[in-house]
Amino acid sequence: MLLTPEQQAILDGEKGETMAKVMKTLVMYGDAFEAEKLVPITSKYNHLVTSFGLKVMSPVYDLMQQLLDSGVASAQKFSVDPRPLDKNVPASFLQNFVFKNFMYTKQDFYEKQLESLGLLDKNAFSCACYLDEVGNKPKKDDVLSWAESSAVVYANSVLGARCNRNSGIIDIMGSIVGYVPYFGLLTDEGRKATWVIKVETTKKPEAQLLGSAIGMKVMEDVPFVVGLDKWIGDELNDSACAYLKDFGAATASNGAVGLYHIENLTPEAKEQGNALIAEGAREYIIDDAELERVQANYPVVWKNPNAKPKLCFVGCPHLSLEQLKSWTENVVAALEKNGKKKVTIPTVFTAAPGVLEVFNNTEYAKKLEATGVVTSYICPLMYMNNPLCKTMPVITSSNKLRTYTSARYYTDAQILEAITGGKN
Image (tube, rainbow, N blue to C red; front, side, top):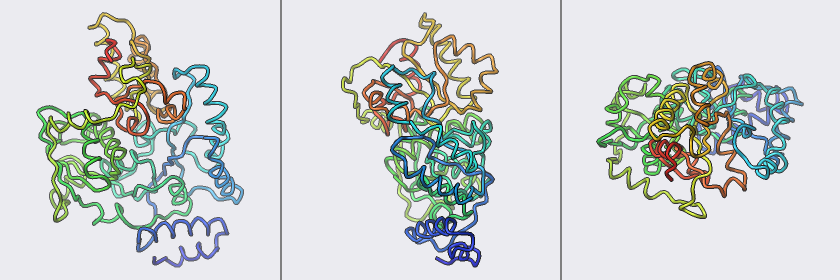
């Protein structure tokens, strides 16, 4: 790897031993991927994936403390993934006991470390950090040092920023030193599509289901999706962005997609069209039958597959403001249609603290509260990490949550029916 004189000086210890170690870490990371150089991070803010104070993560806290003790701070302010706990989320006495005494015992301590290192603000905890209410929205061509997979794929695809799927801690290393290795999705060649996905459905495909099908097929490759603009339009409005947020999260979790292009919609696809498709790209056709096949093959890992769901999570990644409003309208209408006052399954809608603050000042908040649905800022994945929660029959419309936990996937329509009519 070729380093500039300034980069070499940091590696040689000119800015202290700790900065030299940080630079060495990034150089070794870049060498592993045959990066030719380091390039400056140009985004205003960073985003960290590690937001949870698990008791077993003592090496992380030790590392953070070494950075703080040596006077090293992030060159950027940063947002972080969601908090793991919220007293408003339904949990039994034993589940809460495990959360507080055996799992997230270092949460307060770790959050103080994050604040000292450069946390954007005390409410900057969301996997959807790019939403306006959170305030960490990169510009096109910005070079990032992010690790959260759903945020990386959104930034690359919808915003046209440039970021590899980094690992946790590498994200803060890049932010501290101000550079990241130049390879993969940072390069023009690495952003070309090696798959052409043809959407030939007879109705608007479920975002999380379509993303799942594509992720499992292309894995870490870059797909160019044709035919989706027919269903979500050719403008990146609130509705299209919300759809792509959920779609991208599924491609990233059910596969390892870090970038996708949507014909006539996403920035690079609009600018370059078919020039983004690499020579020899493979093809995958998705129709109604293919989506039905994909969903039918999801494993059900509940001890009793026919159990009545005890909890429902909607919002992984976090819901946008418009999604919260839309879900509220749909729940209210469905309950009225079914002759019910409140949801029949305990249900949690998750969103960023900033989104919830705005939502709670709208007329929708009281309407949703009256249905019995709880809103929260937590990460459902972190909730489901509790061994006592893993054994619960939980349903979700998130393919990411399904992939990483024992939760069972339902489409949005199936979720709505289940929570308002009592159908499993």
